[in-house]
Image 1 (cartoon, rainbow, N blue to C red):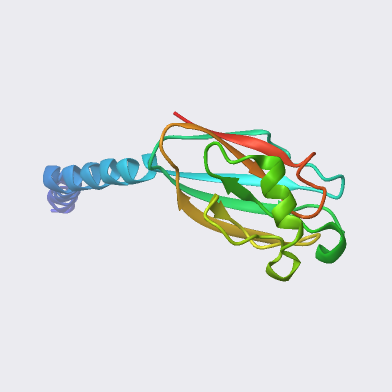
Image 2: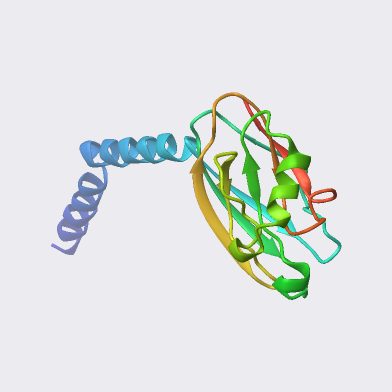
Length: 161
């Protein structure tokens, strides 16, 4: 009698674990998650007290959702060694824009105008900030830190292809 109960129990487990429709559902949802993630990208950009970004080139696809986290790995106060990330539209003159930014102290060195695609607030040592934006159309776009005099060292490019 014990053998019959054991065989029935094993048969029950075997058939209940081989439920084909349930495994198809899991596969489908996994594929959907991959599709969603392929249109999103997370970028971590570090900055420091030596006025440097750790990356000079970032890349994305047109329309891709970019979540960018800017970290300030230094110790400098944001009023002395603050950093931000400003992504400029194509063909914006970086030098002209940076001169305008110096005058925008009250808005954390973000000047008024439509020359920017995305930007973060100003952060100090040990702080982080995250923004999400859609990658622009195909091309090369400059990014800088607009804290006074930082842009000459703290600059890079987002390549969208």
